[in-house]
Image (cartoon, rainbow, N blue to C red; front, side, top):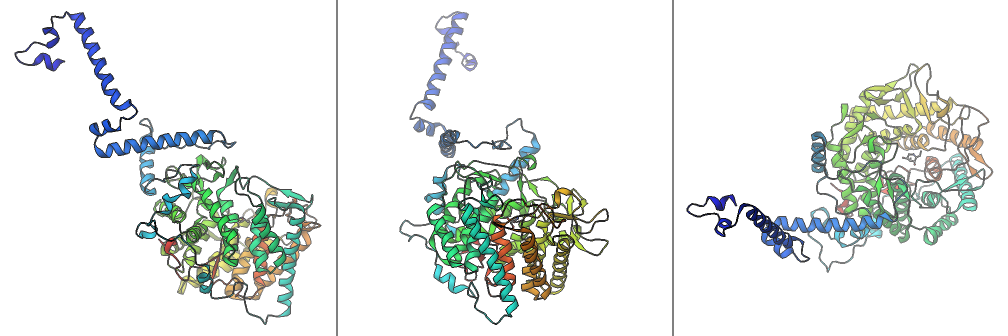
Length: 639
Ligand code: DMJ
């Protein structure tokens, strides 16, 4: 209006109509209202997109319409989700969009995180159709040309895979001494006893309670049942317990229900269920195990829908909603959890032809390889929102352990092609050697924990797997490093053996310390228990296979005897509450990993080396064997 007034030689046109000041105001008010209404109508009328194209540049139109459809679809999916919200809400609300009021540092972190994560995930929690449907399958794998509609459906060539193995899966050698055979048969009998009791009192539940003779379900598996069945399958198969294997298989075929709606640990479901099903498929070629693994794998994908692509620890398998553990500081994800998906997820892509699984874990690798490591160490808590460390606690035991294991095993499983994983493993081990490996006054080598630069001179039972891992890595190193790492592996395994021999039961405590005069013994009441864990016998098995020193078999046999004496009860095996008493009380729980890992590793310790040969297989962290990619069957897993 001001402009009109100023036009030279022309009075303002309301004035030209002969209106007075208040009338002019009313007129202008009316006019501006009319204009606003007309413009608004262009955008608000049902079919306004044609008009929008007139007013907005092409690209902005596309994004405006896609974001509006995205928000409407997310609105509808969240309203669907509202009906079956999990009991606990997400621990930390996800700041998907940094508000202008958000602190500048947070906004910068979010931008960095988004850069590291690459393009945003295309699936919303709960939108399983998108994941299962054509969208992700149509994506070209490893730069291949886009899929055509005429392409034959993907089929994994199982026969070709079997031909690629260098040894029969259950071995083919003979000629061992009678004592070794008898010991192996004893362990087989223990497995049968553990299975038979589970079957009799708890089939379909997650674990057996051997004292009360009933089942335990727990809350780790999101409503999934039969953890012991799935964990036991490959052990039963390897031990040639044919009838028992058929019982387990039948349960999977008839009763294993994946349509559940509960809060599951992403990590536990992956290592036990996905790992167990994949391994059994590879061992037997039975389709049911493959299809269940793939179906379950797809249910885990929504956990990755975070700003960085680092998955959250807990997922509702029904709704796809995910959140962080309440106990994990500031809504963080745990290194040993999101770092222990790589092996299984590559195989899910391998078997399905769907690269989405491999993409998810490759992105985790990308985030981890770029984030700054204090002194070269990996802390245990990472924010899935910003991609930065939340707390500087480093441990090769609980919270960190299997992340390191999966680096070296990713390299081995790729037939030594995944050099990025090898470098990350080598660098991490170097930092661990430099900052965490210590020798006690009594000459025992141990790996301490690190809290913001301060050492905690403690080793958890979980950390005892590292003897085996370091030996496995050393086997494939050369020169100086090979020798040094082999010695380190042997020393750590020996320390873990000490933690067993220094107890009254000859079983090791949950954690042992090297301070205040203690050497490889638990000093706290709360750390004196043993829950049938496998890590120490796991290291014996690797050290035996790689060195053939008889002491590892002797030590393994000591464990068998101690288990028989203190953990075997009338209806199965039970953990004990105190390893430092000869009359321990039992915890009434036969853990599923006792059948998956402890008994399997003990059995393999007394087998010839060609049974599940280390030339053909890597064991996932739950001891489920996954094949080494000798033939480059498909490049889904390779960076
Ligand atoms: C198992 O479930 C796995 O080995 C995991 O990596 C750590 N802990 C248990 C057994 O102790």
